[in-house]
Image (cartoon, rainbow, N blue to C red; front, top):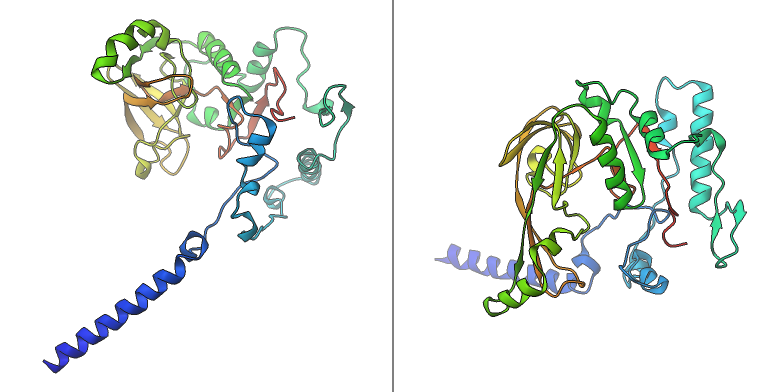
Length: 334
C-alpha cells in the first residue's frame, strides 16, 4: 500500500510538471517547437486572384506577425560548383550564371528601362542563352529540348532530365498539345464527370443556371481539365497525394505504360521509387472558388502532361536540359 501511495504521489507530481510545461509552451510560438521553413524571396510571390500589389505583399511570409521571431540562415555555397569532374571552363560558366541569376533576384540589373510604372524594367538576356529562330517559336523550342521526340521507344531518363517551363497554364497546355500531336501512337481521350454539390432544393436551379457543358469548360489551378488526352509513352505529372509511401505525391512525374477505361498504368521516373509501376485511378476533385456560388465535383484522373510545366510547378524538380518559353512577362508582380 505504501508503494502504491508513493507511485500515485509521483504520478501526480509528474502530471503537475507536465501541465506546467504545457502552460509555458502556450506562450511560445509554435508551442516552443523548432520550425524550419525553406524558400527564397527571389522566387515568385504568392498569387492572389484579382488582388492588388498591397494585398499580395500582406500575405507574404515577411509580412507575418511571426516574422520577427525567425532567424534567417543564408546558403552561400553553390553546391553545383563542388561537383567532381567539372572542367575549369564549365565551372567558370556556372559561377557567372549563378551571379547573374542572383543579381536579377536582388534587382541589381535593369538593362532596358520601361516607360510604364516606376518599378518596371526589362532584363536583357545574354545571346548565348537565347534560341534564335525565324519561324514559330513553339516547334523551335520543342525540337531544341526534345530532339528525339519522334522515336517510338524512349528511355524514361530522357523525359526525367528535361522540360519546357513557361509562366501560365494556357501556354503549358498549348505546348503539351503540340508535342502530343507530333508523337507516335494512338491517342486516348478521357472525359471527366462534373457535377454540382448543392442542397436538394437548389439542385434544379443550379442545373438550369449552370449546365454541365458550361462546367466542363472551366479550368482550375491544380485540377485536371475536362478533356485529358494521353498516349502510351507520354510523360505525366501527378496532381494529388495518393500514396506518399511509394512516391505517389503531388509533383511526381511518370511515364504512361498502359491505358484502360478505369485505370492508367504508369512507371515512376522521379523520387525514391524510380522504375516502379503503379496504377492511377480516377479521383474526385472538390472545387471551391469565389467565382462559383457552389462546390463543383470533378471526377478525373489526377494527371497532366508534363512536356511543359509552369515555373511554379517546376520547383523541386531536378532537370538538366531546360527551355524557358516566355510568351509574356515572367515577372507577374513587376
